[in-house]
Length: 409
Figure (tube, helix red, strand yellow):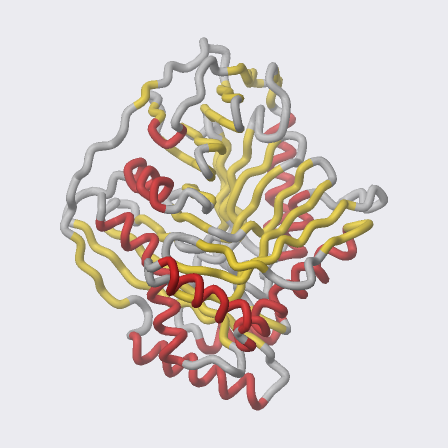
C-alpha cells in the first residue's frame, strides 16, 4: 500500500529559517532566502562503503516507489525530497533523510509538502531567542604547531614526488554550558553568510560557498573554489587584496588543479562543457576565493548519468582532496591525523525527478548528541609554494563562520 504525499502552494513567502511545526527541525538548504527546510523524519538510513552513492540511489528509488505523489506545484525542488550528507571517506557513514514535512521557496513561489493522509500541517513563525551560552574552546586532533608540521611534511612530499596538491584539514572543539539551539544557529548562519548555502542534516550544520553539482533537467553546474585570502573589512584594502589574489601564482596553481579535476570528471557524461579561461574573485563576509563556474549538458546517450553518478564522479575533487586524487588521498590518510566524518563530503538535496543541488560540506560543524558541543572544521590546499604559517592563518579564517555564529547565539 502506498503512502500519500501532497505538495501545495503556500499563500505567503515565508522566512524559511524561522518556520516551526510540531515536528523537530531535521534538514535545511537555504541560500539568499530561497531553498528548502524539512521537519520530522519519514525515513532515514545510513550507507557506508565504496558503493555508497549507488546504494543511496537505490534506497531513494525504493522509498519513492512507496509514495503516491500528488504534486500541484511542479518544478525543481517540489514533491518528496531526499536530503543527503555523504562522508568524505567511504569507510565512514553517510546520512540520508526524507523529512515528513518540507517547506520550499523560490523567488515569488512558496510551497509545502507533507507525507500522510492528514490535513496540511500548521506552520508557526518564530525567531529563536538569544541564549548567550558560555563557550570554551579546545584543540582538536592536532595542535597548531603539530598541524603546521604536517603542512611542512606535505610540502616536502610535493617537492620530491609527483604529488601536485594535497588538502589538509584540521578541527577544533567548542564546548557550551547550555544546549545549542540548532534553529537559532541556522538563522545566524543565514544572516551572516547569505551568499552561501546554509545546510543542516543529521547535526551537521554549516554555510558552504562551494557547489559540487547542480542538476536541473540536463544542465549541470559546478562552482569550484580554490585559492583564499582573508578580508580586512576595509573596502580599499580588500580590493587590493582581491587583485593580489587574482594574480597569485600559488593560488592560481591551486585553483587550476581544482577546475581541471571537475572538468575532467564531468567530461564523460556531458555532450559539451564550458570552462571559463580565468577565475573570478568571490567575496564572502570574511574571506575571498578564486572561483570558477564549470557548466555542461548531460549527454542523452549517457543513460545512467543521474545526479548520484555525477556526485560519485566528482567526489573527491581537487578542492577538498588534491591532485592526483589517489596519491592526494593517501597523503591525507598519512598526514592529516583525524577522521573527517562528513566534513568535505557531498551535502544537499535531490528531488523525485532527479534534479538537485549538492554542495561540499565546508565551513561547518558537527553538533554532538547532547547538544553541548560542536566539532568545527577547516581545510587548506597545500602546493609546492605553500607556507605553513600562511596556511594556519587561512585555516583560522575558515573557522570564523562557525565560531562567529556560535558566539552570537
